[in-house]
Amino acid sequence: MKLQKNTLLALYSVLEFAADPTRHIAAATIAEKYGVSQHHLAKVLSELARAGVVASVRGVGGGYRFAGNLRRLTLMDIIRLFEPDGLGTEAQPSPSGTTPADLALDAVLSEIDQFARATFSSITLATMLGLMQRQGKKT
Amino acid sequence: MAVRPVRRGDLDQVIALDATVTGLEKQNYWRSVYRRYGVGQHEQKHFLVAVAGRRIVGFLIGEVRDWEFGSPPCGWVFAIDVLPQMRQAGIGTQLLQAVCTLFRREGVRKVRTMLSSDNTLILSFFRSQGMMAGPLIPLEMDLG
View 1: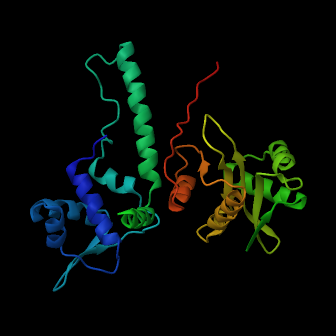
View 2 (view 1 turned 180 degrees about the vertical axis):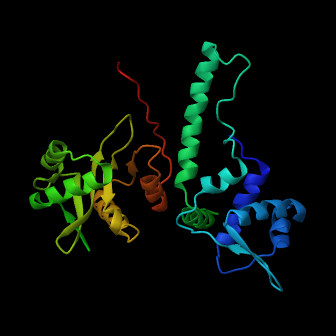
View 3 (view 1 turned 60 degrees about the vertical axis):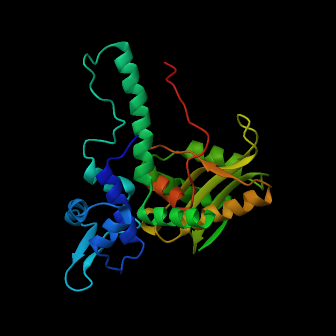
């Protein structure tokens, strides 16, 4: 399963903001950290702002800040904003779509998709920040 | 709020709590569970309740299971719930911590659970406690 570049960028950005909800971070800071253009990041942040996940802060020291609920917002909520058609594991319509092999592959891909969705839907940003903290201690 | 082993007099409230959450009142099931996990102090079987005043506000059932499919003994949590209006107050966390303490005393170093993949509420709770996907994969088939 592979998430699209914009989805990953959104997840990284949200985690940056969520780590300290009181802090404003300039888009340029995040763009530089993740090696993407500000123009590219702006589209992602704009979508996150439209969904109420982040809020833009104007003026000196402006940028964006986290505006969601850490204990409610899940990874799937973010992913869904950028991949409304699914996770990329979902069964794709095949040319014929009705052979036993098509149907068997559809069943296997659906199984993978079900677990991927359950995983992303059960991990809140608060849980993710805790996981990051534990991973940080290991390194 | 206190966590303690279930008592016979708690059972009606546990049944009512479960019925509130699931919509099904499973009298026979819960009496059977009580006989297996709640009467006396069963070794390695735990039926805990969270009590606020005289009210049962949550419960958890777990046990130590040995060598399932080659897995060393580990603690299993197979039921947990908290009154909907009492959630987000750390009751589930206290119940889980209590059973983990009992599991540790019994010599196990791993705790597992299994639940429906669409039960995001309880999945999120276990995730928030640090649980991750384990090495076991649940499988099933229709028996026709």
